[in-house]
Length: 67
Picture 1 (cartoon, rainbow, N blue to C red):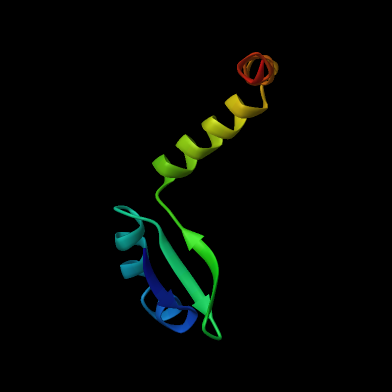
Picture 2 (picture 1 turned 135 degrees about the vertical axis):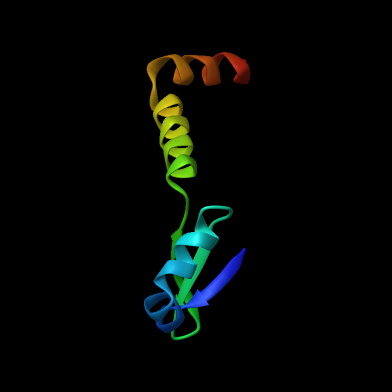
């Protein structure tokens, strides 16, 4: 995963957007990653997966697999 400093992300925001459209980009502050910027499509995919994992059907299916 590509990493930009917070300063580079701030002053190169357009570049950050361009990079994040093709792959997630970590933004670091004081040498430590603090956030990840990702494309809207990837965010929507992850949100949908989270909702599926929280659905009652998913919980039932997990319990049945453990048996």
